[in-house]
Length: 108
Image 1 (spheres, rainbow, N blue to C red):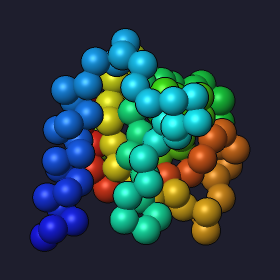
Image 2 (image 1 turned 180 degrees about the vertical axis):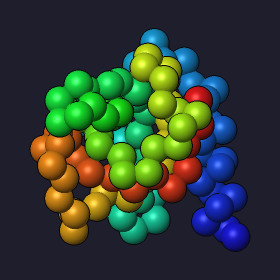
Image 3 (image 1 turned 30 degrees about the vertical axis):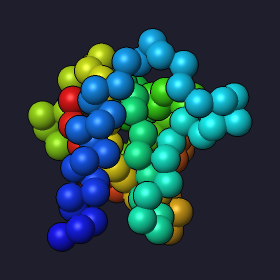
């Protein structure tokens, strides 16, 4: 329960941040490490027409993310999203495009 409250609080906080603000130093990571293997990342949904077509997230950190469970409500090119995800290094994808992730929570 505490983990859920923390995650939702972080998503709410990220929604209030001015994206034009320069927060932190150059050494600050763009993604925040949460509980264990969870990461918090902001990005924009995009669509790649290779391998039959698929949606991916172009992270503000410059990394592309290939979600295995992107819900239909987020499958719109150009929308900005914030998400908590788990990097799935145990999986491979025929997309061969970005870091494979499993989304835990997502918000616009």
